[in-house]
Length: 343
Ligand SMILES: [Zn+2]
Image 1 (cartoon, rainbow, N blue to C red):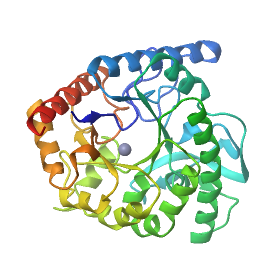
Image 2 (cartoon, protein in one colour; image 1 turned 180 degrees about the vertical axis):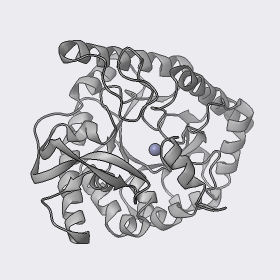
Image 3 (cartoon, rainbow, N blue to C red; image 1 turned 60 degrees about the vertical axis):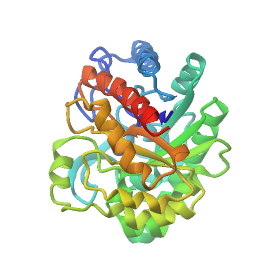
């Protein structure tokens, strides 16, 4: 039987936040909002369990966005004066906060939802944090200096803070800490040169499993348009996988189904667990068990059975809730079929 997991995010219910948006506005404030975040976390834990997923998560219900949720607890960041910046090599514009002084963690970031999830599930619990390089690509720096040296200094400053939170999450009972690094697929040379080292700094001292998720982004129009320019073969992973294979990171999450990633690139991850994306997050079409089993079968040519985890290509946050629910159920059914077929 193949293990199953989601990349990380799930849609927020309409009573918690605006739906089908990457930066949704909350529907409540104060204690009422905190209660709503907790309720949504519990709801999605139950849906993941009922679907039959082996590894579950909080669905990122307590953060507005996967990067800015972490930054909200970081001192040295000015959220009052956001600036417009082209991110992911100008693929799209985002309003980003500015780094204006030395970075320091003001306190715990995700204690509430991590402890809540741990108290309510016996399954393996995975928790996601943004990776240092992707954070650097989602803020405007006014403090750590220009050029590559400045970006590296900033990345390692964030890596230290991420490490503090990751160690605390592990103490809360989290089994797998995953860092999301979509920027690795945009700045491949930098990722291999220093991004993986910054990632290792963020994961330093963790005793449980560590993971990295590298994708081609959420299923939003800017990403779909960008993918259309990448040609017949998407070989971005080829540049960073060798550095990851040598790293201390245990698991790598990648896009597979409906992507143009040559599956043989998974061979570069020898010795790692591979979270193979068998669910497309850019389409509302629900994958059939047959399609999922086929994708797993293709990956098995390059990944040993015991190292393969069936996963979604990316987070499901901007999708409709009922579509996401159906995709979770499909994921488990497809993995079960593959389990029978490739036993
Ligand atoms: Zn992703």
